[in-house]
Length: 104
Image (cartoon, rainbow, N blue to C red; front, side, top):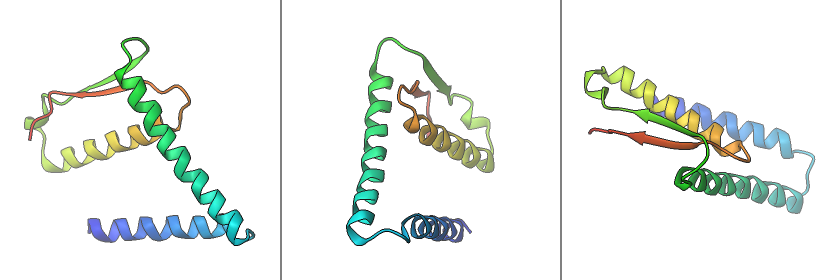
């Protein structure tokens, strides 16, 4: 089921990209795609810097209770953390994100 979900997500992403770039020429499309990739990399760098900074606001997620969670709850938590990281990458000055007490 997860594989089907990911395929559907990839197809929707591809369709959005095609819609956004349909009026562009080849060079414009490449430039647009490179800009998207650069924005993603820059967001990751900003998030890493914010997490390593001794000052500034932080978000701390404590997973010490994860051994008491069912598998479906763990999957949901992982998805929520993933969404949080994705949103933080978009911000110019993101909060530092720390995940602590992570078990197997």
